[in-house]
Length: 98
Ligand SMILES: [Zn+2]
Image (tube, rainbow, N blue to C red; front, side, top):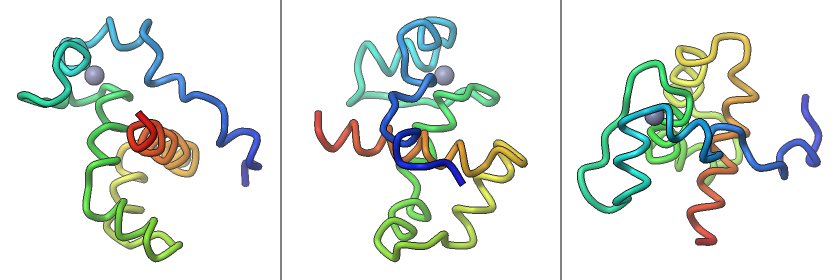
């Protein structure tokens, strides 16, 4: 399991360089409150989508993975699902603190 120092690092998915590569991310960056879309196969979009999912919020509230959220992580990232979760968590915390 990754330790807390890993979790505290800014996720690569939300850096401007990767945002510029995706139209959905560019649209979101231009106006986060209107017409939010997600592009399939885009890591940053996946992170954003999962961070807004009911399964993620239920999992954070419960302190453990809910089946649907974990399944969504594994569907998106396979064996790297735990790392993807850290990105989702970091993105969610970033939004909460913005
Ligand atoms: Zn994207």
